[in-house]
Image (tube, rainbow, N blue to C red; front, side, top):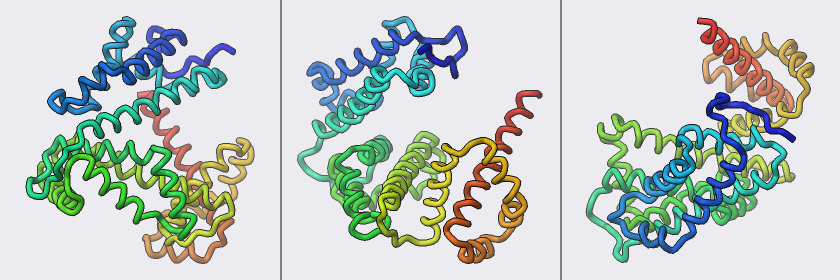
Length: 311
């Protein structure tokens, strides 16, 4: 089946064979002893930067711009939805990136833990990136899942354990590292550093999303949850998005028609009033309200985008 051309313009369209070649060359390079030897040396700079430079070099060799190539890789699912071989290769590429990155950090693990010096900016960035990658690994997800099955709650204790392990991986004693990290976060330098702020937000979102995803999986499998109203609300939104994906357009329209006025009223309530209102609803009613809110917000965003396009 021919791929759907979405995203890049016709001039930027990257052929499937070129995408496959890029993925295979990158995988081979990341797994090579030569690359590991280079990145094992901490003097070579941050591993993630070196890995990105390596990928750029592959695109350069293929005579394809990094922007167009990166866009093509990120849209494989959209443009080649039935190409199982390419989708599988992309999955292998993603896992190799994460495995290789963590291996490089392990190769650089300091023999003595730091207990006095403050954490530098580059280490803060490394900590945030490493944490984000760790929460994508199968082993960490298994630990989070076991804790959720045990308690039905957010697996905060496992999250803390993982953060401490990353601190030690980067050479900082756990308590001192967390203290130094919090100290850096309170500085004006942190607030003005866009790269650090983005990395911090990415880390927070990754941690939250993975935990919510696993809590939702536990719920779907019949497990009981013991979470507060805030987490319940986020899980309802996650469940609502899943159900909307399989809902016919005409059913979505009927849902909006039925609940639009109710959503408008609830959205204007103060936070405490909204929470009081939601506690009176059944789980089915909360789910229906969440689905309607998502649909209305999506329509409003599309209308805004259409308005901008006409200007």
